Image (cartoon, rainbow, N blue to C red; front, side, top):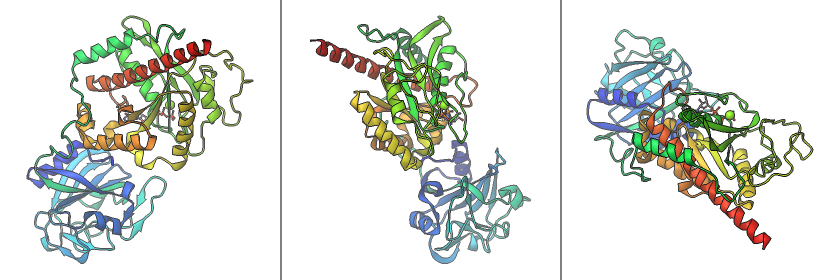
Length: 465
Ligand SMILES: Nc1nc2c(ncn2[C@@H]2O[C@H](COP(=O)(O)OP(=O)(O)OP(=O)(O)O)[C@@H](O)[C@H]2O)c(=O)[nH]1
Ligand SMILES: [Mg+2]
């Protein structure tokens, strides 16, 4: 389950709680559903908790109780409780509001979500709330905010924007002791080296890469496929940035309702220090959408190397052998040699059924061709705050490990085929760890591409005999 609470805000809460502890997610409305019943089922009796709300003004606020939640219908007495604001209108702006009427610090009612204060200072919601398109319109109440908590001169509008439309609400359990076991324990995949030297070594390897020599292929073709917004174009941009020496965005990327990429592109990457092109192509395609599925026949033509670079997808007119540009005498050099499904690691729980079905049917076509598939698991920074802080925590993060396992399961692929990466999206300069993850993923794709070409050569030679 991706956790929204950033490391800096966790640290702030831990400072306020004032003892060595760490936070473990118990309940999250975007994945568990927003209902009082679910909240109590997951959080009652769990000891101290922090409740965090993320509203549509980009304000983050909530409350801490050192006593456990219950469904008894009575007030919860807690001298250590506090309400807080962490972020206001998108800017970090932490404030703590200590309890002033400890006897009514919390309220445990089976029909209410997390509720603080008497009458109430902050009631998050009651019964169950359905998500509208983008947010949960919580039906709680904060008109009495300040009755049981000392607001130190603030008011509801400067804490909550008077807005209970939230994109998420999370409840974390507060566990005594520093966080070693739960998030950053034993590595789940071996990764020893995050040094600059290692980065340079992988870069050298990629620069030296050539497809299997017996083929006439001048470059390995890696197809990027996946849901809209998963980070296909950003992956190309990030790899391109590494060899360019600065962050660039040649392929359009962004977040829109429909796929930003509407053209089939076979991108080559130029190493700017040597002026040479690398011997692989990243083939960027249109994203899968709920209402637009890439035609399976189109994908077959891509896999078999019949679709030309810069083909403009047209949902009304399928690509056929009569389409101008159709590559008729495609050979091994034009074919796709490895498929990389690009999956947004922060939304794995909510991939629409229709898209999963499409992926499965595409996988059948790939398996028929003996094409290896890997997963580029993107947006690692949104899965785990420790990884967001520092990507070298990727292979010790239990949150990332869980998502990798889930994706391997969904895709029916070995865990080792799921490669976590973080794309450049907001950075001004390159980061060694980010580059290493991206280039290691590429190396794996090229290994698979070589295997595929070897297989094809064997097949051709056995057919000739
Ligand atoms: N935080 C974060 N954001 C990312 C990452 N990768 C991509 N993004 C963002 O996600 C959004 C979508 O990325 P794109 O690369 O355009 O996705 P795409 O798969 O090419 O999407 P379509 O072309 O629309 O099918 C952009 O706003 C990116 O900045 C990542 O690793 N971390
Ligand atoms: Mg794109």
